[in-house]
Image 1 (cartoon, rainbow, N blue to C red):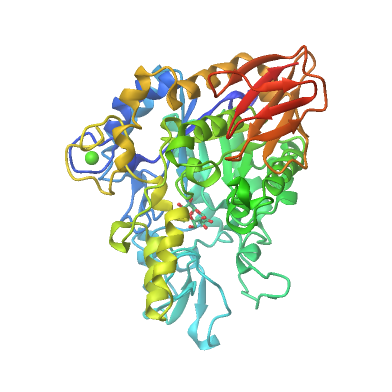
Image 2: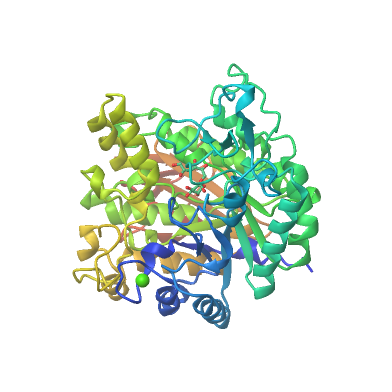
Length: 557
Ligand code: TEU
Ligand code: CA
């Protein structure tokens, strides 16, 4: 069945359902709301819609804690609403990808409700336990828990269950054959309904060594690196591919939590028959951890390291296929993080980043709202946050007498809720998102950054995005052509060529708030500038290109 590579030429548009469009005034985005806005999504020129989890959930982690895989979260609507949405997406010749969350379930899933009753319960073995008679369980950390401990004591079974995420997200035992079969049946249920693929949450973490050895912290400085090294990980992914994915014309993209660049090929090399694509957290880590090459440039991270990382990922996929993204529901807004959201640079740097995402080799994963330039909301108070990640860490710091003010300041840059504020449809009080009280505050910049006004302005961030999408689609070279860095050592400019048999493009992007000079490896006298984000094209002298702050341009050579 699987013969097409439609997902290679596609642009994925990620919708966070809670924040996209509220159809009934309860302040929460929903499926009917998304259906109402499909013409907008279609107008962008994107091909695939990826929805964050829409399944029944008590929402401890906004849907990433599923209590029933076969039904829709009541906040979001009904199965009938889902069927309608899927139909309407297909009518518009787009595709739908859902989130598959199978590293863990909710503690309110009936499997876990049974499991925790007794050690003899058939579902006990669907989860991972440490019997209390063996003493204190070996160190395992949790991403979300305020105490940082991934073990939670359960009285009735006198044992601890493992939860890499919150206490309400117990990890599944992938060594249990029945459990795996139930997951595969569930996947088929959705594929048989006609969905076009899955984005697989935390998929790199599903395999554990169930003997729970003490982790050698000299080898795994960051304990989370150990989590992506489960002994049966690739066996499970291969089995899932053979038993489910290969039977349908669908795409799969894994979230590669803690996966290292050199290991990508092990997931996506076609010969291995595991996943089609995988995305890593490298870019966001570089942004958080690397000192700038030239701090005065306004780039707060090493652009050289970022460039190398993208080049390495491009190679590491081997015969597989890369993914390209700069933001999602777990990351702050891309313009704040990788560009500059100060008024004078907001639009320019948004457009520059758009140029980047849509001229790279690989499938771009576009996060809804970036096309209108949505930026971090930068909350001042912990009460404004909804996210369990931010709140639990805050209260953890508070309980140990840590510096909560410093923590809050940092969250303005990195907190996940920055990317989860309601979508900005228009300049009205509730931004056209809801008629009620929005579940999360709306960014005040919706007065100028919104769909309605940007659709009317041919120079808007939105208009530039649409133009770039058309440009990518019109030139296969931008999808399949070889990727090569140019002027690699340039601290301010990300430059590269895309080369196919009969086409060649040069792309130069100034990531800095200062002017920069880019050294192309070829004379550009006969090159034809194709697209740029200022009113005029950049200044070219022989092999040198002078770039204004956040200037972006594409040449055909
Ligand atoms: O994220 C997995 C993950 O590895 C987390 O570390 C993630 O980076 C987190 O946002 C840290 O702040 C996935 C989902 O994308 C995320 O939204 C979920 O909360 C998480 O799994 C649990 O399902
Ligand atoms: Ca609603």
